[in-house]
Image (cartoon, rainbow, N blue to C red):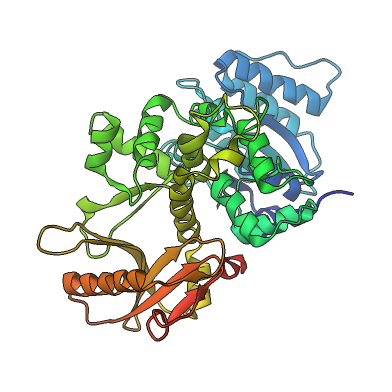
Length: 478
């Protein structure tokens, strides 16, 4: 029996609308490697794709054109096979002439996958694609789907293209990883019955990347699955890091240097600190690398509460990259049960706290819904104040600054059971609120909010002080 298609309802609706519209459509589907872009398009246009070609990684223009022509011969099955043309313009003329012969009572669908690989530098591909669209396709009953994993390249070279493709994209789809709720649904659809604590642990390592989650097997615990997928000789994620960035970016060493710098920081780094830690040169090219990493979903940026633009912080938010740097990279020859051992160590506990924090930060809409403020305008940030000899410093994981004159001061805490608030921890929380109010001079009401795995065990140190408590279950709301 065929597996059920999980999530992506909005994206499927966009693709269906393109199919049903009375105009020619050019749809750009953008998302990082392994996210399921091709699977989505094939699901939406099952049996309707007339011509499809996927770019070849690290291939020359001649090899790409040969592949383009080979796929055209496969689709057309001409009595005399088309010969590989000399350039991209001639290749698209071949495609136009074949498409002209097709019945257009229903919309034709043409699919160009991994566009950044097809459009090798100075090859003329994008110019020829512009010619294909402007001189012929725009007047036809057709959907042209263009897809790419290099998100920043797709945005700069196609969506914001200043040549023949300028303003030609009619619909855009940015495909993101599964939420933790969609991850649960995906696993259940594969008859994997883990509880939500286990799913959270899995998500903190793999994120919501369908291709990674597909490796999880029944009959094994989460620890056993991680051992096999991340540490065994044949594990998919053992060497994924070395392929991931190289497949997306030119000069990927610079991107990796930034990822490594951010992987060593808990609260994030300013641009200046990243330059210092990565040992890269500051300037326009550095800005472009940061932009590429952020648009591809590997890092995120945010402003600490009340801070200015120059104090913007960048944070590594790709779960797998962080896990790789912390555990896989230097433990690849440890043999069986590596994760069984590592998951009992202090570095694991440190990573777990950071990863659990990132999990909540990726599900802000679920937090707001659980707090009953989905309809209230609010802004999220963090807060950090360095201490000195005269006053204490503090760090607040998440701040939700609301328009109804309330600020949720959120403390994120991972534990294996209900969290018990000690006298010392209670005093620490009170100190955080005091430092925050004294530093920011805010007049808004501060509502202390705990984001936890299983909630808290109320006692004399929590009652009447911690006003809101959210558990993992709140994140599994769609």
